[in-house]
Each structure stands twice: as C-alpha cells, then as structure tokens.
Length: 428
Ligand SMILES: [Zn+2]
Image 1 (cartoon, rainbow, N blue to C red):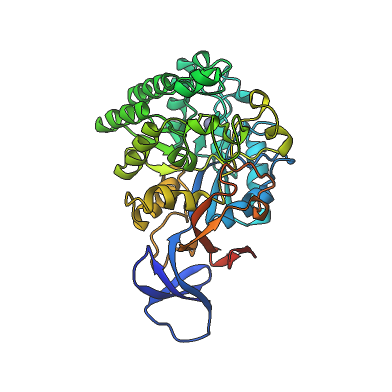
Image 2: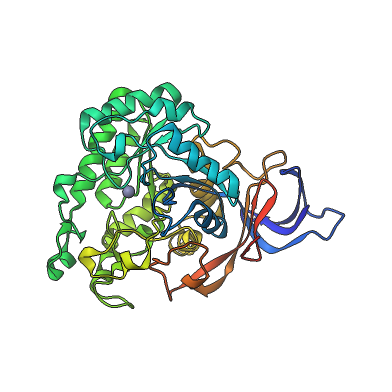
C-alpha cells in the first residue's frame, strides 16, 4: 500500500510504501498503484495514551474496550494504557489478561492494561504486581488512579517491588485528608461559589514525597495529570537531581480554567467541567504549558474518563468527575501548544507518542517514522477548524467540555501496523 503526499512531522511532502505492516520505503515520489492520497496531511507516529479509562469490565454503560478503542483510533491513537479502576479492579493476572484479550479481539488500537498497585484500590495491601508483570498482558505500569497510594510505606514497597521487572508506579497525587468533600479548585472562585475546595497543596505534597521516595529506593515514578504551577516547580527540582521521574498533563488542564465553573457558555455549575484533579487557574495553565514545552512535564495523557449522561447531567455536587478526551486531544494540544508557538510537530510526536511508549515500555509504538519500523501512523490536517460535535464521537459517552467549541485540526487517518483503522476521518 502506498500513502501519498504526506509531510513527516510537517516536513516536505513524501510518499510512504507500507509492506507487511512495516514502512518499506519513503521517497518524494513512489511509482505504482494510486494508493491513498494524504492530501498534504502531517504524519505523526501513532499516538500513545498512558492514561485511558476504558471502563470494561464493569461499566459497559459508559464505555467498552470496543468503543473506547474506536474512540482512540478516531483521535489518532494506535495504543492506549487502560486504567485499573474497573469492576472488578484490574489487580490480578486474570483481569489484566481479560482486558488485553479484548483489545486484541477488536484491534482498533493496541490495549496495554495498567495493573492496580493495591488490592481493590483500597490502599491496604499490595496487589500481585509480579503475577501481572509475568502475565500475557506483560504489565509494566501500575496505578491506583482515581485514588492516591497515600500510605508512604506501601508506596515505598510498591516502588521497590516494580524495580525487578522495570515497572513504574503512576501516582494519582491527591492527599485524601486535604481533599475531603472537594468539589473544585480551592481558590477565589470556589470561595465565591461556596464549594469545598481541592487545594493545590494536596497534589504538591504527594508529588514531593513520592519524588523523595523514588529517589531513596532508586525506582521509576510517573506522576499522573499534573495540574498546578507548584507541582511543576517540584518536578523541575526533582529532575534537576537526575532522578528517574516522569510526568503527564491532560489536554483539558492545558486549556481550561476553574472560572468556567462560575461562568461558561453552558451556564454556571455545569458538571461538564467537574474533573479530578480540578481545572485550575490561568497561572497554572501557563505554567503547565511552559513545563510541557521545556520537558519538565514529559507527555500529554488524556485521562479519557467516560461517564453516562445520568452520572454527569445532575447537580454539581452529585455529578461524576471526569471528561472524555481521546477524540479531541490532538486538536486541544494544537490549540494550546502548537498554534501558540510553544511546540512544533516533532515536539508533539515526542510528547504524545515517543515518550509515552517509552514510559510504558511498549514495543512497536512511539518510533520515529523511518524505513523498517511498524507502520503505526497518524495523518492529521492542522489547517481546518471545526466545531466539536459529541454526537459524532465513537465513544459511548458524550461528556466533553468542548461541545460547541471550535478547535483546530482533524485526524484524517490512523494506521495500526499498516492497516487503516480510520480513513477520511471515519472508522474503517
Ligand atoms: Zn487520576
């Protein structure tokens, strides 16, 4: 198969020939069949998400492995890491293998299960990390995401344990006693609205502690969904020590702010903006963008968190926390980082494909676009602007904060090992 007229990382137009799922030739003009016309689209290595909630098993009303991976493919992803907070929790070899098998069955993108750190995400007892690592799913990322491993002794033991198989603990940094009943960012807006605040210090204190613990035991730590300027300062300091720490930021924390809870195009107190960690201030957004640009924050991860309508369209205090994100991630990153001049397309490839694959120890993904590498590719047209229409999503859920907003760019096609999963913006 030949993919014609595409621009690798935004460079000069070339043709790509794909054979047996691998890039076989790259040249300005390849003779032969008409092939697929890329129309001058940018080609990126297939995106890799380190933080996706697929909801299966247990909440198939919100998302399934099938719909979640279709959503991923439409967003340009060729691999996602499926978070462990399912029902049952992915805390055994059996459950992670079940999720992994479902991913292989549907094959819209690769599914790499994340294992829970503690049994039932309860924070009392380590889960069978070794058995999950040795399973067919070969788990390397472990996380209690949704909850924080707040017990310092357990966190230390988890960090020590995963060293044996080059694993990483991905921490949802939230000191639970500082965030009891929290509804939104603690600040001027929460004060005006009378909502219980989620203070920045509850994230920053855990990040500081975990950086010190990871350094103490010489292990790998990954910090999920960094949301505050103070967290960025701590990470910058920890990285200056040469410690083995990585961090992610979500697209929504790069674009949206907490004042939307008070005043937005969809009214006040609209739970579409309720998310954990919460939307922060403009100063936090600026710090996160700068940190992603300078590498203090390593990657963008979606924290795609589908919820059915009845769990979101309710009063603020009762509504579930989270937003879907796979199908809008690249557009939001273009808006926040590329169109602002903070990142070029090589930088986007690095932060949305190459480095997330490296952190997750995922082979076959996140490789530079060269002859001989698996043809996991995303074709993206950055020149269009379109209104976000949730009814077009492949996700089973519609809880996007971008409904009705105009965002740049469009995923034209996605290829998984040379096979198109999306063509002309539509699922194959
Ligand atoms: Zn989380």
